[in-house]
Image 1 (cartoon, rainbow, N blue to C red):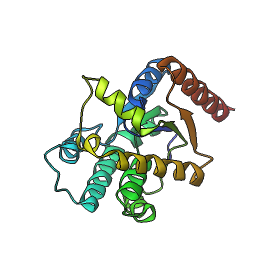
Image 2: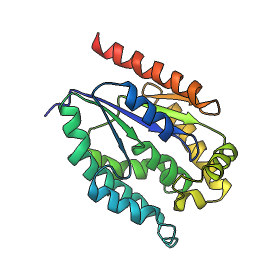
Image 3: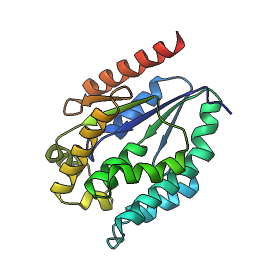
Length: 210
């Protein structure tokens, strides 16, 4: 069945503030469905707990990549595709680009290799628009340390070099997918980043309705 909705994803290094912004955007847009990866539905949330558990330090990078892809597949089938078929705007906190930046580039598995795993999971479904919140890792880590209520997971505990590699991976993806990915400087205030993000999304939705 053909999807009639709009699939928008949000990406960025840890501490970029994307989750805060995506929640504000969801309140602004009518008929929008807010979800996240890994997670969004019960099975995927269970997989999320395994992936991000701080005790699972022995997890192999390939295992990590496969678990993300498995959670992604179930999430798409149960939640994302049905919403798109109903004509909704789906706002997803992370998608395939996260796997490419984190496991493909920062973990050294190779972007093409990780993309192949995810192609099996998502088939032909890709976002129409991806907002990438760009931030220096040092500032991102400071934000995480200041936010006492934020979930601290296994990836947050990686060293600063890992987070620099994640950002490098995202910057490579911006060059690889220029028609789909839009960069926003996430170092500004919440209101500044929110307004820029909202303007980009509204412009894209307006183009689609023409």
